[in-house]
Image (cartoon, rainbow, N blue to C red):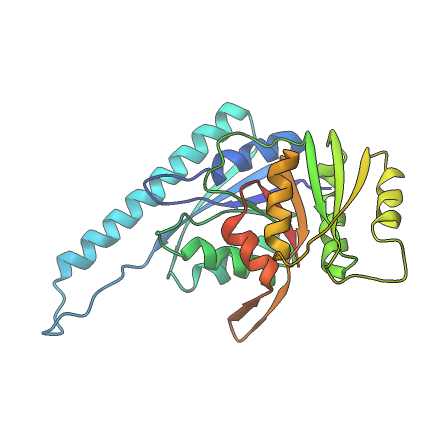
Length: 276
């Protein structure tokens, strides 16, 4: 059951789609939605003289606060229009510390939602997504920067390899899966997995017992990277939403992503629920 959701609100001038997408998810699940906008500490360049005029720092701080307030304003208006129970929060953080702060907050929610970083822009949302995935203990939906519409669950694609992470993701996604029109379990043939069962069959039966319309599709990976195979299949099949396990580990704030997870975080084109 998902009744409490938190979203990281983009404070860039382009706004980003995560906030509006989170509103659609909360509406679909009749959930409370908290929106967090970070006021980032000023990034002060080191001058040749070592002296930084105070007005430069103050101007950057003022700009950062204005962007966070604008994000909160957009969030409040969107949740008001949707009739949601909502909680806007504006917090101060460094670029390096925002991810850890967001992950700690996300532990007290059922689901976290984060936007994908646009190419050629700041990587702060990359950091927030990675830390939330590893450290929150909660599922996370990553929203593509190109996302235009609200949550759509006509055709949901589950990435299954028999692993603990994949099983966790499917379990975490169940409140959304029961609303899906069709669920496709996708197994990449050259991907590692449990060998003591017919790949996908047991999971398909399990989901069918929950009343889901399930199809199992085993596709050949060949010499192509698994992540590229999954992304290509998602595009070809018209998937609206993906569910997959998040692979990797963290050690002293050094994050080591699995290859598939790294590619999905950077290249996915449909909203994706990941669990670690």
